[in-house]
Image 1 (cartoon, rainbow over the protein chains, first blue to last red):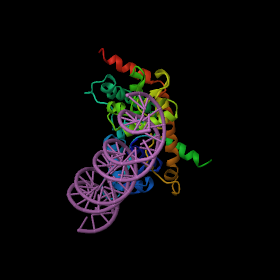
Image 2: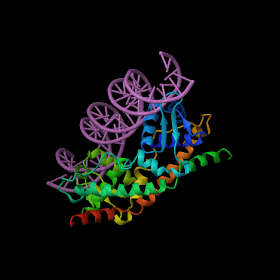
Image 3: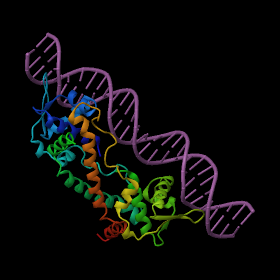
Image 4: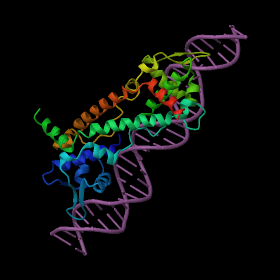
Length: 141
Length: 141
DNA sequence: TGTTACTGTAATAATATCAATTACAGTTGA
DNA sequence: TCAACTGTAATTGATATTATTACAGTAACA
């Protein structure tokens, strides 16, 4: 898994936790433990998909535009990490003169496609709101 | 996903396809498209877990010791790639003075643990035998 | 018994990927 | 106009991945 997925999820949970649902890239970066420029890149992507709104200029930052319970990790996965399950390295070669070697790429690919669907269906059950709730529960244990 | 998983699966399917279930690291490497030393490393691991037997010396190589239909991708996943779903990079910091930032690692971790279970349950439905069967079907299409 | 063909394993080198950093143009509020 | 932001790209540095090399150990076989 892509670490941008982690940054995206963490950022959204943090925004959901803020009373006004707002924070700057610098505040988010400090919380996530990364560089503000990286946060801007990730949240810029979430903006294009309508999960957050941004305001440039002084006093600006990022703001959650959806209900935390309506944003699932599957949404975030599709936005940031779709296709990242299959390794970039690939075995076999379609040009090869062997039944196994020449077909492995296709078959392996279909295996990973199915795996992604499984993952997405799992992620679709987890929302930004439910993650925040889990975090809040920990406080009392 | 780890590419050693791919190498392991491909190697096992190739062995299952061989009439005697045997091949040398050089033959396997040529089919997988990697270096023989890498194949030996991966299959050495599968040997320790009892999926293949090796014979050193002249005429030696690797041999499948189980029925192809009894070896699932979940077995291979556990052997080669357990825990590889979560990115090595990690957000937040338990020492942090923020409810979200300090608990995110734990919560994210539990998300990925659940995801791995999902993946494993999907992989447990696919066997080396079923992959070989899929490859053979393609011949007729 | 010596040669050949293998595996096992570690070390090294080459390459690719990932994350941090820097830089700066554009935007907005005061 | 200044200060505080975002958007984005380029660069550097760190890390991970893959290929390659090397060689000791083992077994078959002439």
